[in-house]
Length: 192
Image (cartoon, rainbow, N blue to C red; front, side, top):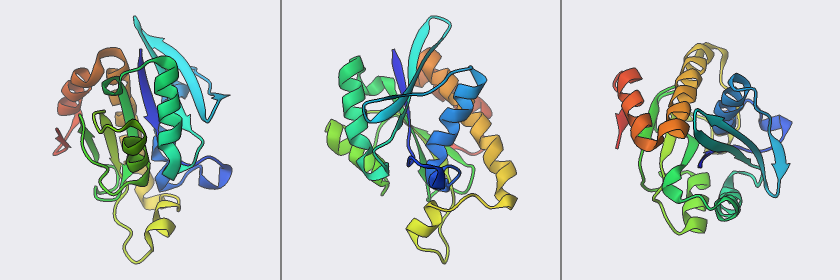
């Protein structure tokens, strides 16, 4: 079984904000596969399968900075190794809509990833970073907690679809399958 963790903040006021792109990707994935989320402990969860591959989709409801609490509980309960978990998160260091995958690595200044790494005592898990662009004149919190502007939505929606495809590859074949698909759909994207 594999797990896909989408990072975001719970609550209506955060629904379509840049910081919630992990939730947005999982919601789109769930819609395409007719899956529903249900509350369980400190996360929302949905279970499914593609072919013979079982998976769970998870949205922590601990707020971003405490995401690691939910992830640690989840991995312990379902006995999922960290390398079989994909984390989908926003990245201000990538232009809006650009995708980047990594097999492991640091938190890149992202508090949700930092929390996961601290609670798991490991950075050995794949992640899909979704570019949201830089804040410009706004403070970081103002920027990440604001919705995508109208002129970016076409790019963002297209990248959400690509992120869903990558997620499908991960749940059905693991990191290598996702990496192979990424190299096919990527135009100048980076992985590692």
